[in-house]
Image 1 (tube, rainbow, N blue to C red):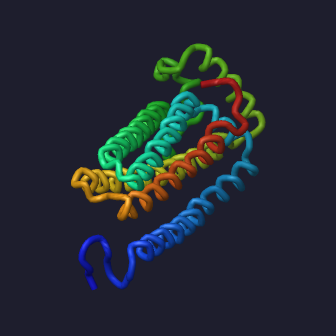
Image 2 (image 1 turned 135 degrees about the vertical axis):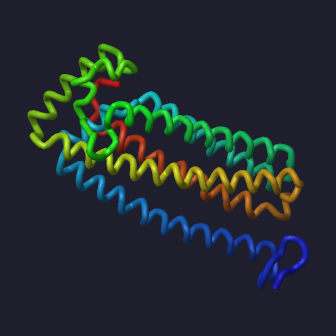
Amino acid sequence: MHRTGELYGQFQTLEQQKETAALGMWIFLVTEVLFFGGMFLTYTINRHAYPAAFGMGSNTLDIYLGGFNTVVLILSSLTMAMAVWSAQVGKKTLVTSFLILTLILGGTFLGVKVVEYKQKFDHHLIPGYHFDISYCAKSPTNCADLSPAARETEDKQLEEAERLDPDLNNHAQLYFSLYFGMTGLHALHMIVGAGLLLWLLKESVGGRFSPAYNTPVEIVGLYWHFVDIVWIYLFPLLYLIDRKAGR
C-alpha cells in the first residue's frame, strides 16, 4: 500500500523502512562478493599454475594509468561519503555538489579504462585469433606509445618468460581473458552506479533529501563504496603482483 510522504508499503516508520533498505543492500552486496569471489579464485588458481605468463601479462599493463584510476576511485568514495553526510545534516546544496563530483570522478575512471582497452587492442592483447603477447617485440614501430627503455625491458622479460613457459602465448591469453572479464565486470558496475548517481542528482535538485529522509543516498553510497573496494583488490592483483620494472 502506498503511503503519503516518503513512507511506502508495509513500513510503519521511516526508520524501519531505512533499516530494511540497508539490510536488502547488504544482502545484495554479499551475493556480489560471492560473484566476484569466484573470479578472484579462478585468477588465483591460474596465476599459481602459470606464473611466468601471468607475470608477463602484468608487466604489459600501464601501472601509471592503473595507479591514477585507483586515486580517482578513492577520491570518489570520499565525495560519495560527503554526499551522504550532507544529506544527513540537511545541506541540500552540498548533496548535489558532491554527487556531481562523484559522477565526474566515476566518468574519469571509465574514460581511463577506455584508453587502457584501446592500448591493449593496438598491441594485439585482446584474447582471440590475433592475440600475440610478443607483438610489440616483433613490431616495435606499431607500439610507438612505448618508450625505447620500456620496449627493451619488455623484450628481456619476454625472453625470460618464454624460457620458463614454452606455451607462453596461450597462457598469457588466459591472463588477459581474466583481466578483461574482471575489469569489464567492474566497469559494468561503475556504469550502473553512474546511472544511480544521475537519479540521485535529479531527486537532489528537487530538494527531496533531508535529515528525516536520505535513505536512497545512503544505499547508493553503500553500493558505490563496494565497487571502489573491488578495484582496491583488482589493482594489486592485476597490476602489481610479480611485476618487474617496465611500463
